[in-house]
Picture 1 (tube, rainbow, N blue to C red):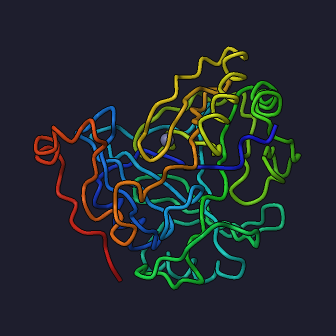
Picture 2: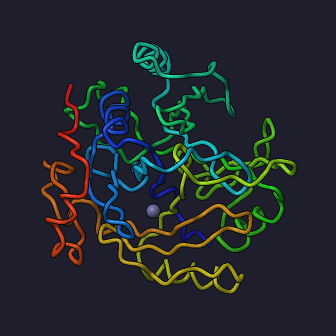
Length: 315
Ligand code: ZN
């Protein structure tokens, strides 16, 4: 079972859309590759940040729910999103984030890789983790961060669980993950060797209350599959394990299946294609509000309801 090849994207809930754009585009230097709306609530933006080409595995997306209360970290919730940077660039990032007044903790070492825990302006816990693993990454020429120091993709997700074996068994027996053991209380499960962009780390926290979605929390992690045929094969096993996966939903840039892992973290399967260039010129990704075809008829009403965002920040 090697259908899942890594993380496809991660989605989180944030506050004010402009502050989110300011942080991820200007401070972290990621490219806004798609400016769209929440397909289930078109009065809310859906912002996608990635590398220059929007490679699967580089994409971090946000729903700005400005009026939502802050979320609460807890079991059954992703508690940290790790972003991959190149080995030897952590001091650059530490200085850069310090200049921008970003909340940070001390550098730590995770399985030999240096990691810098960071909190974004809306309370989202992130970590910048150095890696030398091969990554599919295209630097963005117009980024405020030099090409050799840019974020090269999503590195990992960390989640808290009440019952570790319950989720671990599901990951290994149903989704085809391997167990890469424990370090510092974090148990790593991964696919294809479990390197950068290919793992999740779980910590058992039996006495912590259930986490709650809200501003500053991860919403879901999507796992990457090559195509719909592969997606359906994995979906059939999820269904057989009574995790009640959704049908395949057309997200236009990819096709998705959603389900809760047994501990409560929302997972998604997402296909590699067709990708973000299906509806925009690759040179101008993210510059215009893009709507899926079935919302196009409501464009003027949708645009009138969204707060102005302005252009993505350039250096
Ligand atoms: Zn998703």
